Length: 379
Image 1 (cartoon, rainbow, N blue to C red):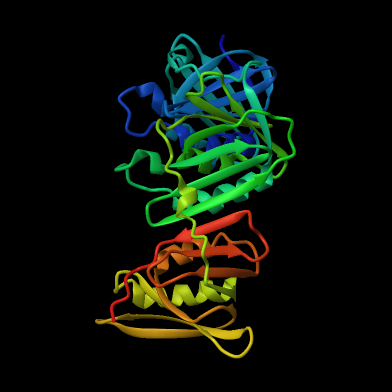
Image 2 (cartoon, one colour):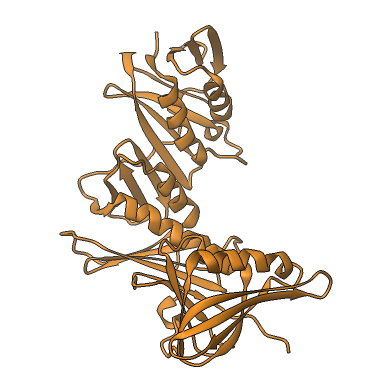
């Protein structure tokens, strides 16, 4: 006999949902398309890897016999998602490498590959450096940064996120050449050493997905050789390869000599940007922001877009403005991206000149800075 274990359908479905994002898609090694099921100290361990990233999830189970097998991830995932929410019994026929599954009136036999053929997944050891990060804050920070990473591989380093730590401050930064997102997380920790890593944005997005509401902290674990990073929460763990190379010095991109501070309601500006996008998408995504101070601190911002084929629109927003008026253009998609992740009611837009980058920040929160390149305004 091989492995014999039973668990709840909803737990199995949730665990498979977490790990299946690491399954190798275009792979020549059949075992990389599989998910590993193994008993582990009275729990069921699920794991998947594409060799760049590995995700493990543990679920509560009653284990009758220890063992392991790998089966095609997609087959198991699709099957488990259609099962009724009750107990699932799993057992392995070792001789034929088959996983037998029973749930309610359903039985299935899934052909697998021996667990010995599954690539070993690095485990934390006592020699690793460990940094504890508040889970909810890390999850939010990842969302505020990863969207600005480059999508194409022409500069591989920019598809990653710079994750650095020094003196109690963890900093996440991503840039694609048109915009830069920087988020700082102050940590209360006894951890000493500064470090600087470049982690694939895709891996960080999976870290955010595996953080559950029960998780209070995420452990960032650094093996001594520094070729990988491990993120560990109570019932899941992700191992990612790091991206080789030095991340560009993004601090020099952040403008210092701000001339105009414009405070707007985040939701209003986001709606105006979405509306402008209807016309801007025909015009290279260009949206015009005309910042017009009036008496005192009051003022207005006109958000407009025009396309020669489709027409034009304009939204006028109330704003509180310090400094001179300015007309500046941005890619409206970039505005929508950043406004969608700013959690505060109000946002401040800091500008210098029409040909210099703009800065967006949540009001009263210096720990998030987004820099966006301007677009050329044709007269």
